[in-house]
Length: 416
Ligand SMILES: Cc1ncc(COP(=O)(O)O)c(C=O)c1O
Ligand SMILES: Nc1c(O)cccc1C(=O)C[C@H](N)C(=O)O
Image (cartoon, rainbow, N blue to C red; front, side, top):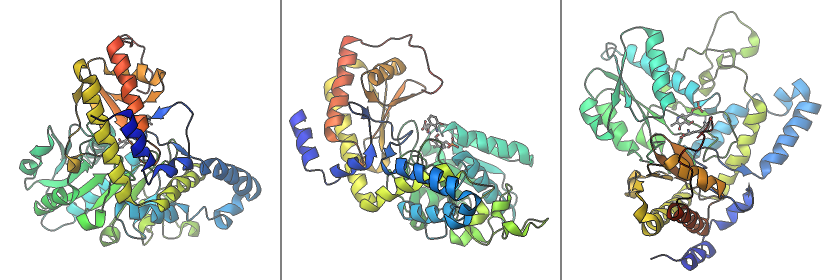
């Protein structure tokens, strides 16, 4: 049995505790939703001010050259790269995760279509439980191509081996599932896809900055992910795309805007792709938003992913144990795997009134979120979450459930 006193002792001994000071978090709030939108690094306010006042206000158009705006997507990509096991020159921060997925899928389909033995393959495999935008982007590209491609949706992750037949061109999976928090064994699954002759694309939205990822060691083919969750880049901050060096020369994507051109300012009438990772870009980047990502990435210089992962698992283990001990009588069902190797950095419990309970939690200062059907999600971000906050969150949940202090017919906001 863990007590509040034990949690305070864990905080006192936590080597990462001081990192919370890097973030601006409102007093009295326990923030367990860094898996949707990370907290604001304190440094971002100053950076926003500098970008708007000095770089935009004073520097005007000259800042594309003088303030490093032009190279920002690839410079920040290099800074992010070690967090996902990518090499220098292999990551660019640009566009949204959805758009980057479109580019990666298009490039993978083309690579296979140009392969002498795989050109006839027409199946793309993903999970039915993928974050919907991944499915929608695949459906969009299939419909637009109109060349007989089909999307095979797995109803359960263990159906993958059987699904890897000789028509599969591409496997596209989310490393850590947005709803369940379940994590795939990236090297093993990538190897299975390759053995079947398929290319492997990973969506790292819930992995980057949350769990240890080594894309190069896994020999994955492409990856995408967002910066606004565990990387604390800010709402709607641009996403990233990883194209390993070995695929860059053959990486061809149809959103061939001028920022992907070898010489954008040569203003030529025909498209010639840039030699390296810049060919994964499209058009002009949102500099004000992009610049803030650096403040989130800088915090990762102060810590290792191994240390973050250790604390993340300790926080989620504690949460699961406390919920089961204190709230066990209330029909909560753990959706997230218990095995560490299969768990990301958030924990989901389903409850038949999950939405209403989550709204009550939020009203009482514990912010998580809700996903259909019935799933309450709690994200653990070891950079700024303490063990005593986990204790407090579970006590609040217990009180709400014990007292039935939630409104079953609570009106829904557009974002849940
Ligand atoms: C797995 C996954 N992929 C993609 C996205 C979103 O993509 P976008 O940033 O394009 O909205 C999310 C969350 O929003 C996600 O959880
Ligand atoms: N991207 C989001 C948004 O635009 C609004 C609200 C939430 C989000 C999220 O990131 C949701 C998140 N990907 C999820 O796992 O559900």
